[in-house]
Amino acid sequence: MSTDSVLLRERRGAVICATMNRPHALNSLDSALRQALTEFWAEFRDDKDLRVAIITGAGGRAFSTGRDLKETANINADGSRPAYELSGEYGYPSSFQLGKPVIAAIDGHCLASGLMIAIGCDIRIASDTARFGNPQVTRGRGTQMPLELTRAGLPRAVVMDMVFTGESLNAKQALEWGLVSRVVAQADLMNAAWALGEKIAGNSPVVVSGIKRAAEAGLLDLTGNEARKLWGPMTGGMMSSMTQDSIEGALSFAQKRKADFK
Image (cartoon, rainbow, N blue to C red; front, top):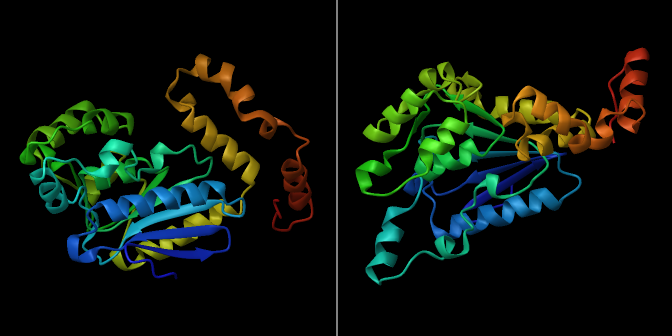
């Protein structure tokens, strides 16, 4: 594992894990961490040998509690705004056309901008200690969270309860409402995330990338007929039964061996 000061990286084959590393500040997002995340997503996107990314937080107490309000207060006192607000580089995975899946491994508090990072991931796994919320109403800050949480599939009443009160969902509630797909014991979180990442990385990268790009283009949010018209052209060659990966998939099945997708 590399030892960046604010963002740790660990790579295992085609899977890479980035760990937000400000545990003393509950992995709150200051300018340095946002910049490191922005660079990480670009590197992941451009590395053809990487197929899956995992994002998590260090320390066991928080995935991320969102914006570093101490830094913001100091900058605002000078009449300025953080550089990331001016550039729009917030470090969210959703800001990039990655074309590859991202897994959020969430432990402890996942709040505000930290929740924005998690929502921008394709799969969210939570420990049984995780909590999800958007307390910005208690800090006098505007938020687009109602839109993002609704797009993530939460019922409107649940979303409005969260954003009006600033209260959090626990891991069980998050699973019940579909904010996460799995809840595991805290001690098992990273093993589960790595296992899932490696399983996805072992599948056809052509098909996985096609599905991801279709999701990024919003096809999954369309009605059935609208999506069907666009799915084939959008996902291109992955639909063919004569791609190298589809040929290998059939051959490996017939030969009763693991597929070796390229």
